[in-house]
Structures are given as structure tokens and as C-alpha cells.
Image 1 (cartoon, rainbow over the protein chains, first blue to last red):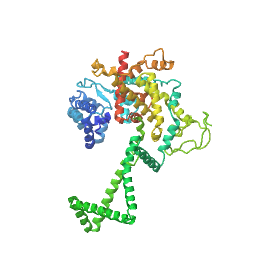
Image 2 (image 1 turned 180 degrees about the vertical axis):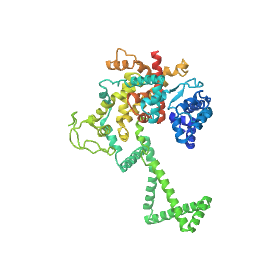
Image 3 (image 1 turned 120 degrees about the vertical axis):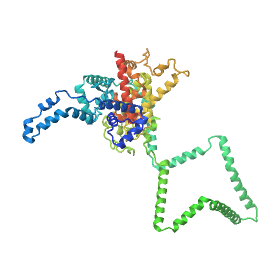
Image 4 (image 1 turned 135 degrees about the vertical axis):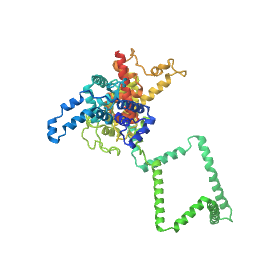
Length: 351
Length: 223
């Protein structure tokens, strides 16, 4: 609602000005009004108009008001029914003026058709109200609600100015909709087709429609292809980098072969011992770092507590862990693997 | 064989299109197929399908573009680019959308890009010589037919010379696109929003303001 790109219809803005919206609807609309000058201006216009209508002075009825009322009351029938005509007549005569004023005050402001506004002379009582261009266009396009449309119809039946304006807009619509469809030159299609590689399109579509595994393997192949050197200098560099460990291995093998005191089993035993020793050192180092870390210690305490907790708490913790892992997996999947969740492929070619 | 003489092979229907219509060897009447089916056939490398799409949309696309750029020759180039770009990107077309909307979107984006580029090219670094008329100065102008133009070009440019066409040409590009799509192409508000890639409320605003401006411009001319 607060987006400046969304504009509530005139009926809603009028209802806001009249204070007829529910509190939550009014709050939502107010949020929009804070950022939209156009709607704010329309609401202000409605408020002005409705305020002026409310402030219209209480006009006393004509002097013959009571007489005209009584002329339409079947006094004889009322007298026969409830013996109240004298009271009614007295009340009408005595309270005619105050009742007239009170009724005017209590009556809610008259709802105007959507898009109706006052002209510049709103201070004058009974000033003409006319349809706005927006209201007329919506009417002609048939986008008004049935109720609003019937109110506009009623207004048009009595307002010659708006009828004329409506006719003008109607003519404008006919004029613009009668614009011809223009054609390019006759060889347009041939010129396009001369530049379209039909087989390439079919191949591209087929490529996009392969299975995920095929696409993945092709992707890996493309990555591997990119990693291969593309120049002589690149090959020399790559050869140098790979030659160093290769020559090292060759040297070790040669040393073993040439030295009668060293055999291959001894070499493997030595390498395994060194390997185990290196891995063990690394593991001990990591363990020392982890064990001394306060976060790790806190987690350890937490898990210890959980392990000692009741099965119910344990189950809850497990469910929470599953939910967290599941959510994380879903997020990773959506971001990395799920193709076009928002239909973006539809828009891509236009960029 | 199809009416156009093209053999109709039996092939595998591309998985993104549920019902490509050539499961058999019966003659294929492209004119009776809907856009999605024709696109499915085009994806299988059928040139006649491409030509069918061209025959369906060359006029609407050209009409939109020529009224945007106000130059028939340039409009043909841009419309060509739009078709070629769309055809080469058919693999990424999502059949859940209308093909025509997708095509119009491509054409509109190309045209708007061109107009923006042209505006950048023509505006001096010192600004407009007449500050109040800067926008108008950068607007595309009607190409005056010269002796080298074909009769078809001349016809299109002459059409653009009418009062209402001139008035449309003076609208902001956004208003122009919205009004043309709505009233000349008969697109719904939702389709216009999809083509222009703007929210529905914005489209309504564009169309209302565009029509108001257009009516005022026509009234100015009439006066």
C-alpha cells in the first residue's frame, strides 16, 4: 500500500476523506499518502469538499413548510387511527425549523460519484460538481465498479457539461483506437530470416533441455577446458609447475632403486610413519585450539546439558536442529541450484 | 508435407512445451496453431515456424517501434533486431507467458535503449541551448523522406505525419509505449505492465497521464 507505484481508486480516497474507512484500512492508506503526493492531493481535495458540505449553513425552511407538510398528511386517516393529528400538526409547526437543521447536521455527507470534484467555486452553495478526466477515462474503459458506474450514469443524465466532456473523450478514444497498423517493407521477413541461424536456435534449445547431469558434466568439461593453458607461455609455466613434483618422485624412486640398503617396503613404512605423525600433530594442534576456544567450550557445556536433559527436551532440541538444517539446506539449494524460481528466464533475453 | 512445402517429421516434443503439434506426418497448417505450438516447432529448427511468427507479429512490432522512433528505416532495423534476438533466445522463453508479450518486451527494451542512447549522443555536455525545451529537443524527429526512400518507407513516414501521430510523438517514451500498447495493440493493463516491466499502478498512471497530455496536445493543434 505504501508503494508510490500503487494508487488507490478515487472511491477509496473519498472514503478516507469522509472518515468511512476501518481503522486498519485508514492506517494502511495513510502510509501510502505519506509517500504519494498525487493521492494526498486528491484526499485533500475530497476533505475540502466534504468539509464545505458539512459547513453549509442551516437554512430555515420556507415559511409555508408546515403548510406543505400538512397538505400531504391525510389528517382524517391519522385521526381515525391514533387520534394524533393535532399533536403532529403542532409538532410540525413548532419544530419544523429545528428539525430541519438537525437532520441536515446529522445526515452523513452525501457520497459523490468516484472522480467527481468541485470546480474552482466551491465556496458557493450548490456549486457544480463534475467528473474528473480520470473518472471519465475509467468509465469509458469500463474499469469502474458497477455501483460507481451507475452513480456516474446518474450524474451524466443531469450534467450537460460532463456529458459533453464524456463525448469529447469518447471521440478521442475512437480517434486513437483507429490508428492503423503500419507495415514494414515486404522483404522484412526475408531479411530477418537471413540473419537467423535456425539450426543454432534448435541446438541451443536442445542444450538447455538436457538432463541436469548432462549439463553438470558439460559445465565441468567447460571449466576444465578453461583451466588448460591457451598460450605457449602458459604451457611452459604449467609444465614447470607440474615438473617439480614429478621430478621429485622420480628422484626418490631412483634413490631407492640405486641404494641397496633401502627397499620399497621400508620406504612405504617410513612414509606412513611420517604421514601418521604429521596428521597426529595437526589433529593435536586443532584440538588444542578448539578446546581453548570459549565458544567451543560453551557449545560443549550446552550439549552436555542437553544430553542430561529429559527425553522431551532432547526431542525438541533434535527437532529444532532438523528444522535449522533443513532451512539452511533449502536456502543453499534455492540460491545455488534451483533454476529460475522467479521466472527470470522470461526477462533475461531483453536485457 | 505442410502447405508451405515443408516436410513434417515426427520428432521428440521439447519437454518445456507440453503439446507440440506434430506427432505424425499429417500436413501442418501453421495458421491454425497457437503461438506456443509454433514456438515449439521453431525450437525444433523448423524455418516455416519462424516465418509464421514473423508474419503474425512483424506488423504489430514494427508499428510500435516506428511510432516510438518516428523513422521507418530505423524502426525496421530495430524490429529486425528484436525478432533476431527473440528467435535466438527462444530456448529461454517461458511458455507460461504469452509469446507476443515476450516479443513486445524485447522490442520495447531495444527501442527504449536506442532512444536513451540517442538522447545521450545528442545532448551537449554544456546542456541544452534552450533550457525549457531540452526534452523536446532530444525527442526523436520524423525522418523526412528523401529521394532514396522506398515507397513503403514513404507510406509509413507519411502516416506518421498526421496530427495524432505527431501528438503521440511528443509524449514521453514511457507514456507513448503505454498508450500505444493499450489503445493501438489492445493489450490489457496487466499485459502492458508485463511488457514494460513496471507495476500495474505505474502503467495506469502512464496511460492516464499520456491520454491527458495527448488530448491537450490535440486540443492545442485544433485551436
